[in-house]
Length: 160
Image (cartoon, rainbow, N blue to C red; front, top):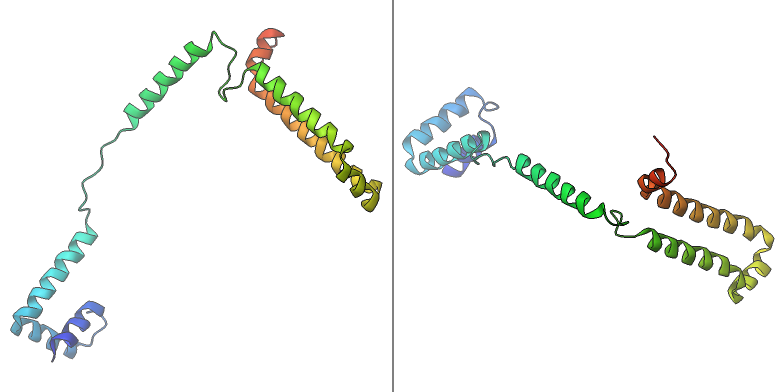
């Protein structure tokens, strides 16, 4: 039996081989030192792959969570004197952005392209556009109120 044939039979599956071939492979490995060395390395590699040969990583979750809690406390102390929210916009910034949104949506109707679209598409084009404008303003208002809910509840003395 050739070395390549014997090693191929070992690597594929020993259980699937008939008894006669298993005996001939075992006999070849006993007589051939090179094949015995290959088979020894193969068995070591299989053992390493079956066991955990990487050391377990240290658990940093407690130190990370403590660091996050400290940052939250520092942020709350810093933000208590300001009207800043987590996103970095003050109430004034939100109002300015809202006005810019409303002005830009209202000026859509005054463009030259809009007149040609309405002429080509008809007035049915205005319904989806109106829905789009309404959804944009509603979403913006919901985000604005939701991000400043604590301030509004304190200002209007609301309890949740």
